[in-house]
Length: 250
Ligand SMILES: Nc1ncnc2c1ncn2[C@@H]1O[C@H](COP(=O)(O)OP(=O)(O)O)[C@@H](O)[C@H]1O
Ligand SMILES: [Mg+2]
Image (cartoon, rainbow, N blue to C red; front, side, top):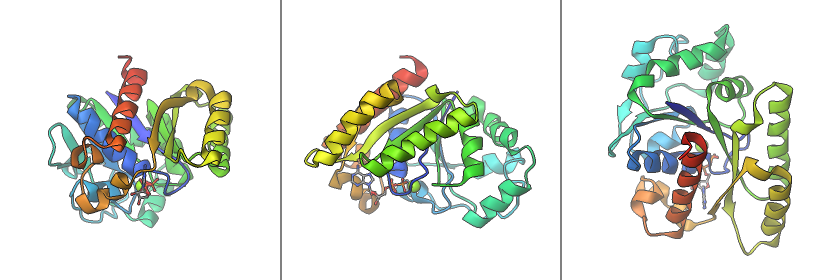
């Protein structure tokens, strides 16, 4: 079983769009997938038409294995279950603050469902530092969408720096360019520069800026399901294949 987190400390970079499409692609590939919506805004649950579970203010949520597993919902698709967002941002912060040794708790909760899934995918909220470190330690791979602009370039460097400072293995990081616009020379230049600088830490697959992805909110389904022959779907397919090769070694 592998844990894959979709993470960036920036909002609006395509974490949820990526989580939703990767979860779908992995499930289509025959892997049993649990997508955990860790963002209290509940966007990935929304895309899969899964209602958020009742707000759980109980701070022992992740300790109580039974409650954790009971909150899991099926989706419209084979092999794909969803753990809807079930805490507000504040509750989550309090939850984390109260937990001593929270690192191993998250890992323990995820291990409880280990036998049931081949992949647990975490759709992360931006910018919760305590949660982030838990996620980095618990995950086998951290998929990082990077919009090819100067600011995102710095964000990716800061993330690598954080890994160095906290003795986390940089090879867990799998960045990729998100919402790339071929016509913008800044995007092209930034991509070239970042590829030189970060080498294998960036995947080859690139997700273009595409209106089909924006329309996911209308269809409430992954692009791979609603527009399977679109360019965006081909890109998510390529991202899936490359990530699978990196994480599962095939
Ligand atoms: N490749 C893309 N092309 C066009 N729009 C995109 C793309 N990826 C995401 N979006 C849109 O950008 C917004 C933010 O994306 P989202 O995945 O929710 O980001 P995050 O989870 O990082 O906050 C959403 O409205 C989404 O539909
Ligand atoms: Mg999101």
